[in-house]
Length: 425
Image (cartoon, rainbow, N blue to C red; front, side, top):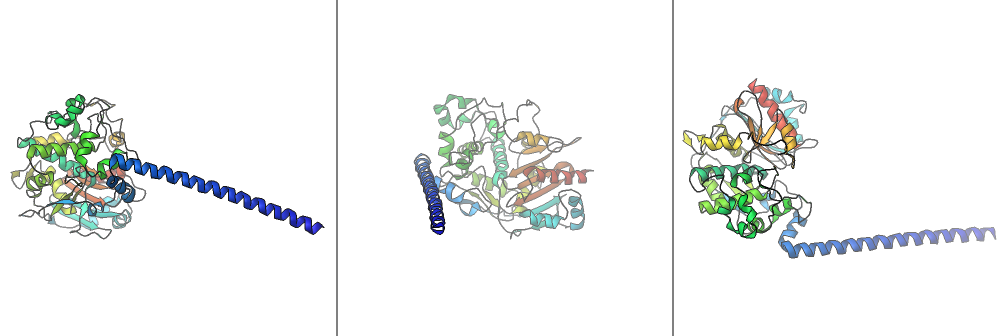
């Protein structure tokens, strides 16, 4: 009788446990089903609003990476007829010692390999002092720009002004893009300068969803349509710095209309061919054949260095003025008129606190130095840098698959700034 009672109780408990697990399993499946319906509904809704191709890209491709240039169509740029070559005099021991004085770096070569770095180049006095590649990259391998492309865009605006295609940075953008004024007269207050300085007042929200502006300005199949129809104004122009990928898209359309040619063709004629690029390059396109503008210049690290040299030489190249010295100075020198609140709406505060203090001008970042010209640099996602220190007569190129484990965007800037400081002192 006792054995029967024990078996009966145990059996009941087992049935109760099984029943609970079944109930939990049903609830879990029910939740999975609800989430699947919500997800599918969202995908359908986004596809109707933003096109299925765009939603597919966001979901399939996910976060951007340095091999995205293989996914997009592109417009080619031919290498220069007359190539420029830096003097090569590599002095790894001295360069290693200087970089390794930084507490972030124990051994430079190991550091480069361990930080997902694709290319690391150091040039001083037109001499290539250090050159190392990683992640399967060699000198003739393509690396991509991400947002260092914006500094090229700014330079093309300056050349277009030099040539009279654009009258001034003070031109309202609606002079070239009247469609915006028809949609909202407030666009008439925004100037080309406001776009260059990231202070237009145009809304920009970085949602991690298909309706986020980062995803849209990167993956949308018709970027012109996006920039002309999806932009809205939140603030008065000139009041706040807000990093905004609609700005280079709008500048690209202005350049295209003002010069009468695709932006990559203008880049090829006015810069690529003029400064001795030794390899072809390309600019990634959307599906409508428009340059991505906020990113997507694909080239070799050694040729990105020549763009830095153009600015180091104040716009001159082997005796020819490729871009006016006035534009070089205007685009990289700090504007002293900003209020303390100017940088508060974006990542400006971190830039301001680097080294002796930083700033942003015409799609170039600057780092203050005492008693002479400031350092300046172009920067792109995952750690793409063109760093220039006029006082040290120095150019540093770094391209990477990421910033490296444990490192930030600002760590690299500190590394470059500290190295340049040693050369100056």
